[in-house]
Amino acid sequence: MNTSTASAVTNTGTSFGSFGYRSFVLWSLTIVYTLNFIDRILISVMGGPIIAEFGLSNFEFGILSGIGFALFYTLLGIPLASFSERYNRVRIIGICVILWSIATVLCGFAVGFATLLLARLLVGIGEAGCTPPANSLISDYYVPQARPTALGIYAMGVTAGGVIAQLGGGWIIQNFTWREAFIYVGAPGIIIGLIVLFTIKEPPRGYSDPPSTQKEEKTGLTEALNEIFSKPTFWIMAAGATLAAFAGYGLVGFSPLFIQYVHGYSAGETAIMFMAPVGLAGTFGAFLGGFLTQKASLKSETAATWVPGIAFLLCFPLFAIAFFMKQHSLMLVAFMCAAILQYFYLGAQYNIAQAVVSTRSRATSVAVLLFIVNLIGYGLGPPLVGLLADTFTSNYINSAGLAEQITASCSLRDQSLGEAGLTACREAKGYGMQLACAITTGLFAIAGLCFLAAGKTYRKDIYISE
Image (cartoon, rainbow, N blue to C red):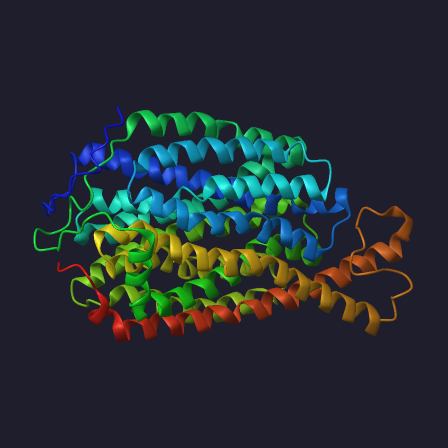
């Protein structure tokens, strides 16, 4: 039963609860985070049918998959995190899971761009109350030495959610409609939210921190923000995480369309044969990144910065080359290897965000990070990559003398274009998508440099004495 002990701050230096119960809580929160990403990523799996039914441009679809979700997700993230610094975190998470699950179901009843956008905004409102309090909970359940692995496991929800969305969504779209996909995927979340409310205990804040850690009274939003603003490590890391999110969410939204346009696979085939294996590789990368960071931290205090930094520098060329490979199996291998390296940073970003602030500012620190990452990375990444693809597509159409025959928003379901027009439409869209995605991968290299730079100030900014 959910027991609130949030008022006590004990700093015992030991993990909270038994190993079995602690593991149950961690995996329950990981399932919640997985559901979080299933519901937000599902729209990318359904992109082809949605674009065709509503006649959307890549930019408009980018709004639905990007800022349409991210706007309220980011705006409400910090207030909800500040609220969770003082009130029961488990209840906040459970209620928000139920809310965003209902909103996901409503996506299936959209009748056009505006109503689908409204439903996506509601999904963002619900999901805003998940990650900051969940990270704060995990930090109170696990001692500092065990947090990199615990947060790495939790971060697996990002890519695990993508895998399940691709596999489940791919199967559903082959057998049902995109509307039914949202209904079938969203409904189970209501039950999961209830399970969270009635099975997870609220631990004392700071319970697992070492006894030497300074005890803090409840802190307000202003005090928490002042503390965060005084930590340069946080902001350098946040810049890298934002660039990685911009590229990552842009590629998640448009890589499936690239495969469909250039390599000729259907939406369902793309999800199951390509995006699901890539997501699975990313899931392994999230865990491996946390594991290697924890091992490296035994010898290097700044491992949380340089392990993901090096991984980003290595994943960039693999991603860039993959978009120009003609052999499908080799392209898939390159995508999977790049995805493993890409997601090394997921646990590290949360670990760094919490390590440089006091126990009472952890949820707010994560919320500020997510505000920046999601507003710029998730909010602007898909629409701007979509706009870039539209621009390259239009350039192709103009240079090939096809302007009187097709436009950048031409539909592959428009039989009035004729066989030649449909072929030209596919080639133009594929060209634009290929260049847009390839250029976007360069942001991973810059993100890697940011994480490496964060290591220069990490020792000075770290709050907890191990």
